[in-house]
Image 1 (cartoon, rainbow, N blue to C red):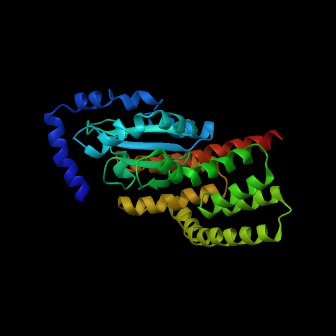
Image 2 (image 1 turned 90 degrees about the vertical axis):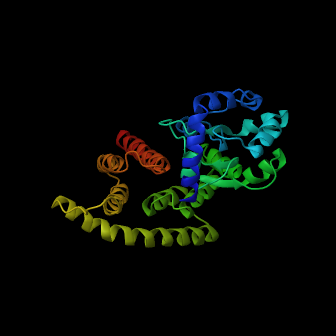
Image 3 (image 1 turned 120 degrees about the horizontal axis):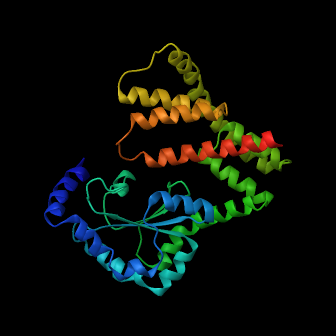
Length: 300
């Protein structure tokens, strides 16, 4: 609440000073030309998936003076060292401008951050892997990003057919709740035989996934019956809970048509609401992966 009140005050200031002109002035700064920044969040996530590189997100603002951003932009971000460092990432530049209707303008706030500048290392779906909080130097950036780079290296090796990397990447995803129990079982069957240590880790992750799914799907089966009878909760919160359960149930049953139907309902429910892009990006990526796998199985 405090942040949004402050933004309202800033918005009045920005409007008086022409936010379009302030943004244009910001984008003329030398650091912008130092690397090939991606400025659209959807494009950054797509490139991350296609090139297997984490996203280096730099978040700044143009609507008001910011000494911290000025220092970073005139210093490290405009250096040759940073230009070389950025080659291992999808460099994403976000400028909060307070221009009404501008796409993703309040993205940083929707990610739960309340101050500029910010440096976030993001995964291929836009999820936060690391929040840089130390000195703004390339050496410090590299230390913050190291775990994310290792994760993407695992992903690359897994895609290239490295069995041990595929196991480690699958377990990392499962432990971050990015797989269903069925997906995890299928992947472990593909990678069998497992060592005793691998079995232990697999069973621990599978247990956690099944516990979460048991709670989710016990309700979802009832919700599916209710929807067939036209019994849908009133109010936005009730509807969201209802349909998110049904989306998980459709994903678990591997029903892409039902997933598409429910995603359409959810998009209508939250139209114009902030902070929903990451949820839909992940859901649509899962849907695309499911369609591709089912098509490959049918072809086989």
